[in-house]
Amino acid sequence: MMRKLLCLMMLCLLLPGCATIIKEDPSLTLKPQGFIAPVSRAPIEGKETKLAALHFLDVYDPWDSMNRHIYSFNARFDRAIYLPAVDVYTTILPPPVRDGVTNAVNNLNEVKSFTNGILQFNGEKTGRAFSRFVINSSIGLLGIFDIASMWNLKSMETGFADTLSVWGVPPGPYVVLPILGPSNVRDSGGALGDFALLWYEMNWVYDLAGVTDGRTAIGIGESTIRGLNLRANVPFRYYQTGSPFEYDMVRFLYTKKRELDMEREELGSSSAGKPYMKKEFDTPRKNRELER
Image (cartoon, rainbow, N blue to C red; front, side):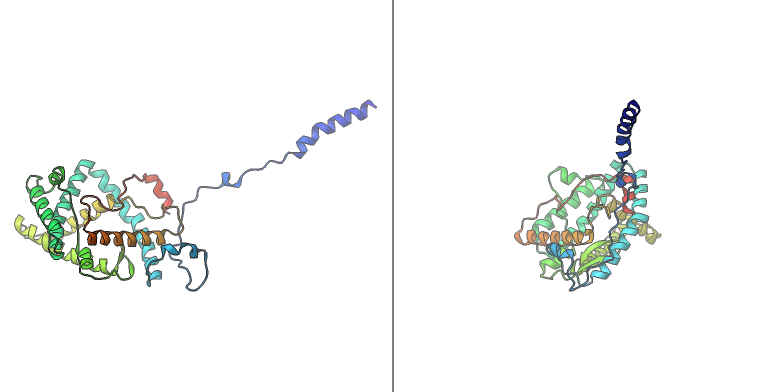
């Protein structure tokens, strides 16, 4: 009898151990995966998909497939070349020096704003651009210091794209430009006009400085610094939005921004010195692993 009771007690002690099943959450054992957006995969026209719920993001984009491939190329170029070059630029030049470069570039851009202010028949933009250029080029030591802004004379930068819009040119289809990014047909034409004006402006600067030899090399260096400085001041990083519809979001935001810009032009409510949708934040270098 005692033997049976002893066996029964041992059996009761063993049962909980036999019933215990060790389970491990698979997500705890998986390596972190970076987000990769299939930017080259466009929805099939006429086929019902989950993107139907995102119809509010629709933008006139007849070159959708080509634009997505260019967007993918831009992301790869940004990750492999542009951002590493920006890292070198920001490492070599301390923030105060980079601020001086930004101010000098913005001062040269006042010539563009002055020219387009005249073409737009906008006296306020024309007068403000002229005043800022004179003040910053003289007291501000060739634009290194933005004295005009300290005197509450904020910039009202404008370009040929805005001029074309004022003249009644429609935006046209959305297009992604290699390296430059989102645009449309009108803004692309405006960018060409800005580049042409910049070329004449820099040759004028070289003439004033007495530079006759090596203008091509100096121009390449100046354009490179402009590009690096511009990218260093743009916080956007490809594939860090956390959305599989990043291309659609960027397309919508750019188009809506330009629509609002032009509405403010028509209403005459352009705010000086306050770029639309400007957001300042830092992106740690280690997060760029997610771009892969």
